[in-house]
Length: 193
Image (cartoon, rainbow, N blue to C red; front, top):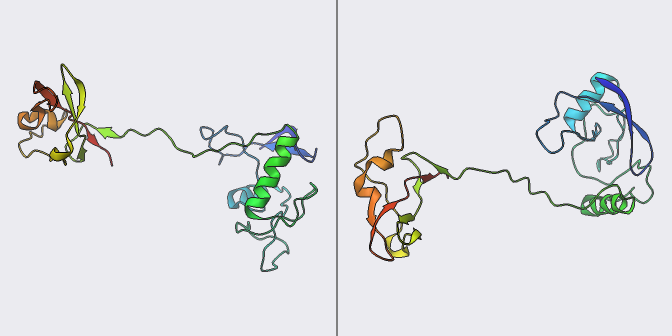
């Protein structure tokens, strides 16, 4: 759906129509994207359905530069760029030139996004790799000594369907602290990987 609004392209000054698309994931990044219908299939399908122009900005090395029937998603040199100096660049050189131009125009900053999301590494269940940690009342958190690795899952657990099965095994749970010898408890969570 067309919003009735336009935004200004930061490098060319071109007025770009602002559309709402149901395929943009609002919780990912900012929820706003710059569509590239010539080179992303979802963007191509959206543009085609809405009658929007499709601009080819990456040349097909095989010479297929006629009307586009689908998005060209492979690598190739930049073409048809209204910004001077971009045509002919490809790959990392093209990326670096665009980043430099955005920085020079005070329209963007070079960032590195690993796209890593928070991930829970432990679970309260039997199956999994035991976390090699002992909780000592005096010493605090103490790693299991190397010579006692790997920690092996016990066989005397009770599966009730609720709670953590490892917490039911005294042979697994109750251990001496490897540092001071005091009665301690083994970590009962297992790694999710």
